[in-house]
Image (cartoon, rainbow, N blue to C red; front, top):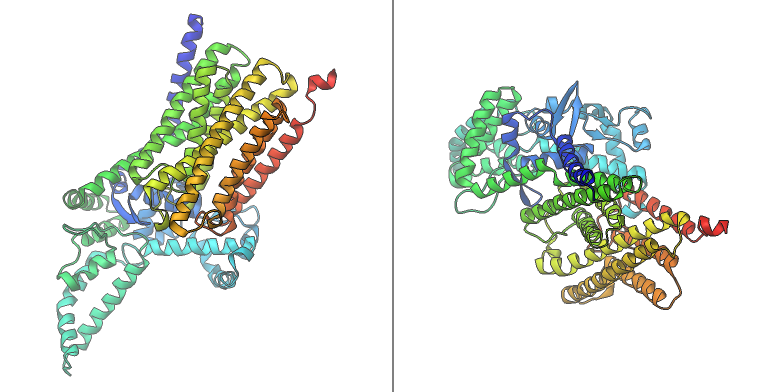
Length: 607
């Protein structure tokens, strides 16, 4: 390689990385108090997480975004969460409820081309009709619900979540929570005295004091039940986190409230009244308290918040695209320099992909695959890693192309799956086994990755076919790589399926009948075995191998996503309308490509 080309192959990867970092860099740094608040640990969904994760995932569920514009200003997820917790009058103005279903929009009297995101106040006039529709939809079996009924239920769930948020730190519309806590503590002693007098059968007791204490008890009990997350860390010698309501009711058992509850009340009031200095002071006191009482949780929350800000998967997505563009450009000019640049960019993208995957494993304390989101990340990691390895060995540039496509596509799929909420969710008790998650789940997901990579190589061969012979050296190299990855997929799919059967037999006493997902995995094994036998027996050559490999991607996508929508089994994540549409479109497109592939290529038709 000439010196200018060598320099180009080094400069392009560096430029791609710098531009990607600049694209992710926030133009406006968050205020120091918001940044400090975003690092606070809270308990939600069965795990401790930073406020940053809670705010982003919750806003994503409601709005499909992690920030939004309001009156010419950009509102971050953390700022939105603070307003929702402490200042419902302001939060109710924010357009955070995304509505896309046309029939539901018609029910609410919205124009077809109007705003897709509405505020709580926009929806409030329609609550009576919405409540009636919710009652009707809840009576219908999930499998029989229409798209409209599913949309109504989804909106109802999001409104319920929003209401829980407003009643987490304080009862919604509370004007002065610190003052209320003072009044509550003053009412405890006379109220308890009246209660004891009443319980002992005495006729003379302070009815007013008893009623006042009973009112506080009911108020904070309802606050506990409504809470979306629990912000109070366990005190020395304990392990349980508490809601604000629990922390206040602790006075009945321990003669004092949780020491952090008044601090949350002070932060709440200061933020609602826009007293940022008081808010920062209360926040500093709370950070000091956490350092002494929950230092471990605070450190983990800081680490996860740092990961959220680093965004390795988004950065990896951009670099996968940059590497793919360089790979395409290498077929037009400077093949060696641009192929080398593409390879280096894709290696950096894969390293970032690996870093994000590893960080998630550290946070969760689990193997890499625990839910649908993490499976998408891991499948892409396997496919991209194998493609980079094959490119390093063969230097055909097709490894670059397939690494870019599989890496980017898988992270895009994962990004859309993140709309369902926290992606580092707790495991179901029945699946709570690191041994089986490592052996069965990871193994079979590696088989998915191998199958999708083989399908990607097959697509490259089919798209190239009209302009080249199936018998030239490049086509044979592609066939060889496809064959190798099919063997890889068969090995891991078969091993993972058998291990899944053993797990099922040990846990439930059944083998293939226990879950549709395992039957879907068996389909992959049978299809890949059919491809290999057809190849060995001479029934198919290069063209047939590629067509069958493309259909292998269809089989794998059905086993991966299709069976999740059947509504039964441990692997059922519910029917997802958008996912069903995307899966159907993908399968239809693949069938069209297969049909085109069996037609004679352009050279043969001219001959």
